[in-house]
Length: 443
Image 1 (tube, rainbow, N blue to C red):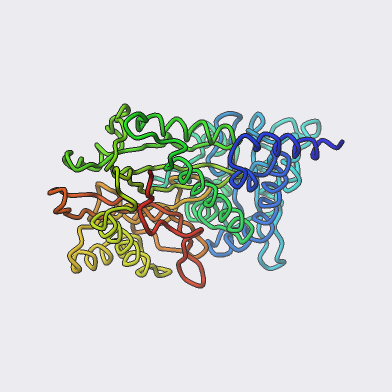
Image 2: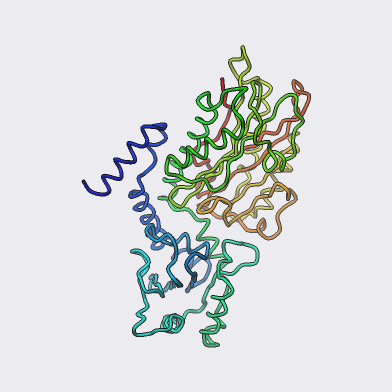
């Protein structure tokens, strides 16, 4: 039996012990590696040339040392490279006139099948001198390197490598150094068609796990705690061969409890809160799979004895959250800044009598990724710099927001907190794999 066939068999057998519908969508490690390398090849050959042209950069140099990788370089490593090796220097040179792109590594090895080694240490023992030779041979107009004051993921060039690079470059080349900020952000935020096909599966898996967590299979009212559900989700993800990129949270709103502040609902939520009939429960949960991440918040309701459905007053409250989503995503427009979209959406929501808060972030190869920031929970008046970054097409966002509404049956406020992956493209906005439109009933 071939190794790939054996791995697939092991994966299928392990899935017998879990939800077959969920596991059927998860590839074996072998097939995941193949898919990752397929995605990388497509991004390097078809996406990167366009991004370099759009940002007017003809040479991009990405430098990292093993275990201290630039966040951008992490997204460029092939499936069989879990880390950079020693010092790895990647050089991308775009010749727009000839419509070519060179992908070179000033390293002892090829970096997978996409990036070719361009350093023979026996001929040129000094790695930095070899880099200078490569640059001089191509004589680029700009040499873009990863530094940025405001976008952390685009600020991956460490001080030591920056200083050694400057020391190695002759003055004429050092004067060509520029920030790769816009190119690095574009590389991180832009999704390809292949990635979006994969994203659909990943979000579906995320929804399926939440559906199982918010069910009688996991929750026994009066016995199960919020922390029990959290660790069930963590274990479920691990057993499926996946990862979470943040620790999930489960919190409770109930009729005899005052509404907590936003920060209390998350970072200060009770870990040992026993889930009771009549509780409105809420999760924040996301997973990582083949370079992509999800981030999802949904609600469930524990039916009381004699109830057969979620009470109308909670269903109506939930609908206000969907309404805020609609107002917000209807305002998406290429070229508009995050702050413009945020402020317009908040004003429209308040004009309808809603009490919205919007704190949406880019989502993709990182959970809290680089790109257009559309509010933060503690910055509802706009986000300096990051919120001024304009919306680009073929990007994904965690549509994260809430609406607070008064429930007379409880004589208190309830906060509907929602988060779903949404795609902005040439044809407008769509949810990657739908959104929650009703509270889940749990008996």
